[in-house]
Length: 295
Image (tube, rainbow, N blue to C red):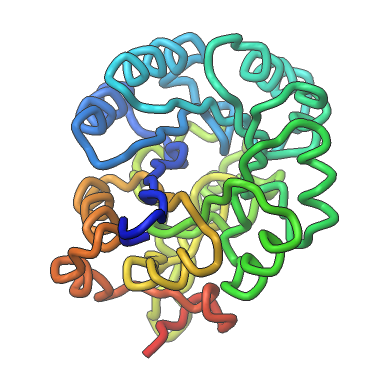
C-alpha cells in the first residue's frame, strides 16, 4: 500500500455508524468526515431499525452532501431483517437510485441480484471463493471480508476470485447479531419497549469477566469486541494479500486520528502509526484468537 511503482494507492473507508447517537452528534461527526482521510463513506442503519434519530431520507441527504465533497458514498442495508418493516427499509436502500448499496444479509442480495456494482458486506460471512463467486455472478463488485478473516484466507480467496477487497482495520469488531436486545435486557426491559437505552452508550456497553477484564461490548442486538481491532501495522501484509481498501468503524473518539494513522501507514509514513496499538488487538488477521495482539 506504499504508493511506489505501479501499485495503486490504498483507499480508506469509513464503515456505517453502528451505535445509536443523537441526531446532532451524527451530523457533527460527518461534518468532520468531509475533511478526513476517508475516501469512501458507508451510511445507514445496520444494527436496529428501532433507532429513529435518522430516517432513510436523512441518510440520503447526508450521502448527497458527502458525495458533493468528493467522497464515494455507499448506503448500507440492515444486517438482521426480522419483519415487514425491516424489509421495507432494505427495499428503500436497494432502490435509492443514487448511491451504491452494501448488502449485509441474503435478503438484500436477493433484491440486488442482477444489478451490477453493489458491495458484499462483512455480515454476509463469505469465507471461500465459491461463495464469493456466487455473489459476484449476482452483481457484487466489492467484497468486504468477515471481520475474523485471516491473512491467509483473504489471500487465498482473492487469488481464486480476484475482486476489489476491503478489510476491517480499526474499531470495535462487530461480532454477532441476535433477535434479542442485550442492552434492553440489562435494564429488564422488553425489546419493543427498550426506552432506547443504547443511546446512553455511544461506544457500546462494556461487559467484563468476573475478574474485571474487558471481554465484550453490548450494542443493542449486536455483540462487539471490548478491545479495538487495529491493523495499522499490517498495511504491508494487507497489500501482499491483495487488499485495496481498509475500513475504520466510527467511534465517538479517535476516529479521525485512526483514519489519519491508517493513511500515514499506507503511504509509508509509519512513525505516527506505530504507536497506535496500545489497548488494541489484531489476532484474527494472524490466525489467532481475535483479542490477542501479535508481537
